[in-house]
Length: 206
Length: 206
Image (cartoon, rainbow over all chains, first blue to last red; front, side):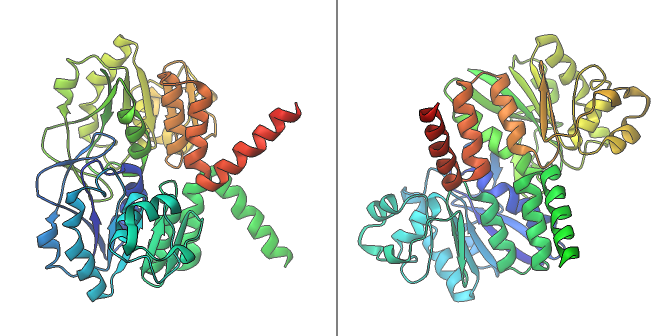
């Protein structure tokens, strides 16, 4: 079973984790594990009490295919420093590293956004917080989400684009099916069907 | 503090709860409470272990503004029958009753979808499961989400439309701001800004 680790700090952003966790955990061969500073319940922005599966120390002993850093209100606190070793472990393993919203600012602050194209909520804010450790402004792109090699970043409204890039990076199913999954949730059931029909019509004409 | 109760059964659908929970729980004066059969941890489709705040029995003793029934894989099990009393309590209180995805099928099965316009994932499936207790087919509409008086229903891809209707029903802020919130997450940051600018331009011309 391939494990995907979701890093959740206190006051994590529910919506940034929800779509990708549900899709991944329902796929044959994949399982989602939540990771935090301690084993006691943490609380989402939405008021949900979540019991982490692993502490960061435990997670460092695991093999995993992706490390997903979920945004929220604690990425600028001391608690975030405890994630450093797990990110290092992910790099050593060649795991996908995916960060959304304020978790991207954390990645910038530990020098991981200097060499590849990436995004965040706002460049100026990223620069202000990450300081001298961030020298990647020339690689910053204003998009919902972007994936370059094993690095995925997204802004806080890009939860579905973030999910799509993670599914693509992990090659969980054919690209066309991932695109259909994305459209289903992005456009909604009725609009997605209409688009499918339009595309089928275009294919036919071609 | 106005409480909004989220009913979560085993294997609940993370994404159907996430956006609306986070928005509501961050609003001044509102707090989200999770409710399930027992106090022990339940598990989302995404593999998150969630500790409920209340059991259904406890929740029946509370005052609440809305009862939000989150879809998932247990609404056709015996566990769902334990929700009946809480739905009855919500009706007595005049609370908003909001159901998404398979939770709408549950509402149909207890006779709550017969008098007002509503939606679900699929009419035929709703009819098949709800049986004789459902006589509302002539009120069924094929939309992402719909609100009539205190009843809100949505299909499983309509999590943001579902959220918008709950925010509107609870009148948490001016309608225009709720629409902006919806566009921000539906369209994403960059597209939402473009739309705002277009609308501002149109306003100016008018």
